[in-house]
Amino acid sequence: MDSWLPLNEYANRHKLSVSTLRRRIKSQKIKFRLEDGKYFIFEEANSQSLPTMTPTKETTEASLPIVQVGEVATLPMKLLLEELKRAYLDSLQSKEDQILHLKQQVSDLKTLVMCLEKENSRYKGGF
Image (cartoon, rainbow, N blue to C red; front, side):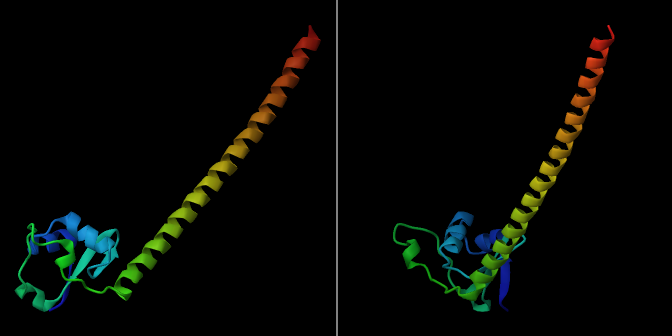
């Protein structure tokens, strides 16, 4: 049965380092998806019978099998982009709220200064 495995589990099962898998994800050499900031790698049912590769001088990244990703990689990228947009808009809204709050504080301080200056001039005039 085909399945999606978390990055660490896939790395342990196939005796690969997590950094190697991340490089393959970045170069889109393996089928993956991103959910809630966590990578999952697609494992086909017959991949259990494939020999696992341990890096040697003879084996390089170029000799490893390449899986075309296509739509699988674009969907997580779209979701990630939407999540980034939402985070950016939330950040902007937060900054606008802070600016509004600071403007209100400045207005209150100006009012206080005006009252204190009037009070000060009243005391100076009274003596």
